[in-house]
Length: 72
Image (cartoon, rainbow, N blue to C red; front, side, top):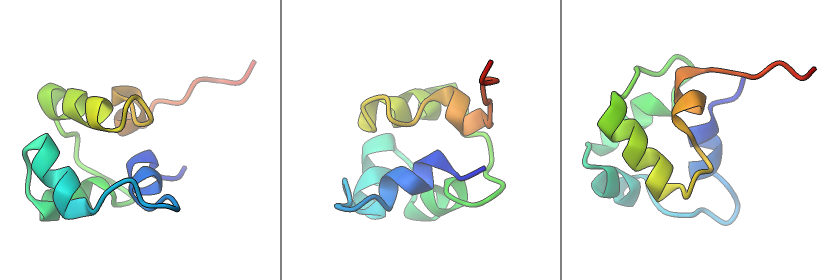
């Protein structure tokens, strides 16, 4: 499964630089890189909420947790 945050940050055209994204959600650029990894840490509720706000819902807390709905 692809990391939705990494996909969003690397979209063409890029919505914003990782350093700007980090500033908007209140974390370091290094932490954003960790969140974009294949096995990211859980960012916690406040950061997850900020990610959802900054991405305008493109990346949700469920995406960050790796939750996938079954296509029935």
